[in-house]
Image (cartoon, rainbow, N blue to C red):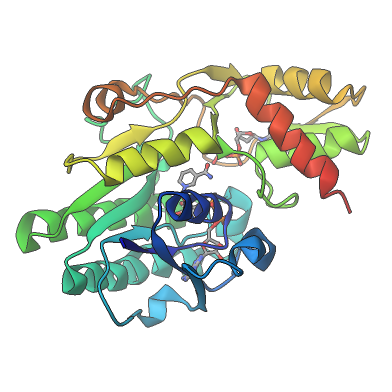
Length: 311
Ligand code: NAD
Ligand code: UDP
């Protein structure tokens, strides 16, 4: 039986990854310090004999007995609101935490999968973003704790790959959404959906003409697994290239929830990227992957989740 460690297992993406690995017949050890995660995301897995959970901060090191085939490293705050509240925890998770998990993978001769981010491109001057683009990242701005530590994590992973012979896979994940996001994590889709369901104004930052490209979580998980099972050792963009403005997103969410909420314009946060869209030709060519879930279908499922979990 194949065995995987998933760090960040009680988070949004990590919990879906655990589900998928268990469905593939894996034994899974989920690791999380619950700093932005939630036990409820993995409560349904605790009955499964092939799943176990370890509450642990990866910055303090990680070890486990036995054979391991894969280490999926997802432990890091991911919402801009979260990581700007806890910048040092974010910096350490993506630097020392990542090094600890790389050392563990090296010891076990496991494949190491690093959850990197489109934020390595910062506020990109190239559009859409290709893996060859080195980005436009503020070194000292409010997002730097995340952006620069993720860049460091990629560098470290690439070093373990090229110099120490570790099998490394680097996913540059673009905005991903779906059930199990925290209603109050501050990211745009949970904000707009919870506001629309409560009949409150939708908070649009800036003029709302900035763009993002949103990927539904099941598509992302499929891409992550294809990458893990491939032999491709360079960074790969994983995201949905369908680009939209935040104003367009308010329209979609208002239509799908039937909400008549107004729009409330607020200040644009410092260093908020103006445009973001992945070029996914590497993922298409190397992994045979592209997203399949439409924005409408993904939003419908996410709205259902927030309706069910409304406090
Ligand atoms: P999340 O906040 O829901 O999950 C992150 C999980 O990591 C949480 O459960 C948290 O408690 C845990 N964690 C944080 N620091 C830890 C530490 N030191 N030790 C152990 N556990 C720790 O975020 P998410 O959206 O699921 O993101 C998961 C990963 O994917 C992150 O690495 C993130 O940077 C990356 N990513 C996500 C997106 C996205 O749009 N969701 C985009 C790009 C990259
Ligand atoms: N945003 C917004 N209203 C909100 C939350 C976010 O207009 O209530 C904007 C934010 O300024 C950014 C985009 O939505 O331009 C995506 O923000 P999010 O925090 O989800 O992710 P990011 O891509 O910035 O990491």
